[in-house]
Image (cartoon, rainbow, N blue to C red; front, side, top):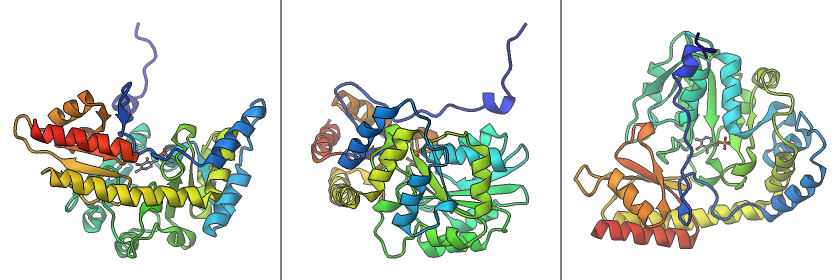
Length: 359
Ligand SMILES: *Cc1c(COP(=O)(O)O)cnc(C)c1O
C-alpha cells in the first residue's frame, strides 16, 4: 500500500534552491551584504543569546515600534515574519485557494509562484519590456479570480524598477478587492527621484501592502526577519495565519539594533553605489551585456556562441573561486546574476571575468 500522499499541488512544487556556496570561493550568489551586519546588531545577538530559555514576544512589539518610529508609520499596522518569504506564505494561506490566481511580472521573484502553488492557486506572469515590469501587461492578466498582484520593486533578478507613477497606475487599475504587494527588499538601495517604495500608499489604500526585509541592507539574512505594513484588515489576516511565535527573540533583538544603526545602512548604500557602478562598467568593458541595476546585484547576458555561453561562464568562474547565480529558473537561461561583494571579492570576480573573456 502507498504511504501518505501529499496534495497534488504540493507535489508539483519545484523546491526553492538558494544561492550556492563552495568552499574557498567567494559567494556572490544570494545578494547578501558584503559589509556583514551592524556591530550593534551583533552585540544585541550576544546579549539575547543569554536567555534562550525564554519564549519571544509573539507580537514583536518592541521591534514593530522601532520600525514604526524609523519610518513614521503606525506600529499596529506592521507585522513581522521569519523573513519576508514567510509573509508571502502567510498571504497565500490567508487569501488564496484553488481556482484563484496571482499576477506577477515575467521575471518576478520565484517565491511568489511557490506560495501560490502551496495554496493550489495559478500564477500568471505578464511579459516584460526590456526586462522591466509592464503595468498594462500586468493589468491585462487580472480577472475576477485574481486575489494578489506581486511586484518586486526593484525586481530580483533583473535589477530593474518602475517609477512610482507606474506603481500608482498599477494600483489605480486594480479593483479594491485585489491586494497589491509591493516587495521592497532592495528599496533602501534606490536613491532616484522617481522611485518610491509605496509606504504612503500602503498607509492610505485599503489594498496595498509593503514588505521589507532585514536580509539585504541590514545583513541579517541568517536570522530570517522581514515585515509588512498595510491596511488593518490585511495585517489582521496575517496575524491570524502566522504561528504564535513566528519571529525568534534573537532576530527581534538584532532587528531593533539594526534599524537604529543609520551609519551602517549609509555605509552599505555608499559601498553599493560605488561598487555597483565600478563592477557594471568593468564587466561591460570586457564585452558582456550588463543590464542597468538599482539593486545590490547585476544581471549579465551571455551569447549562444559555444565557449561563450552562460553555462560555460558559470563553470569557468567556479573554477576560479567565484560563485554567482544561475537564473535559468527565472526564464533567463542565457544570464547570470552577480551580487556586489567586497572590493576584494569584486576584484577577484572581475579578474575571473577577464580571464574568461580571453579564454
Ligand atoms: C532577497 C529577497 C527577499 C527577502 O527575502 P527574506 O525572506 O526576507 O530573506 C524578498 N524579495 C525579493 C525580491 C528578494 O530578492
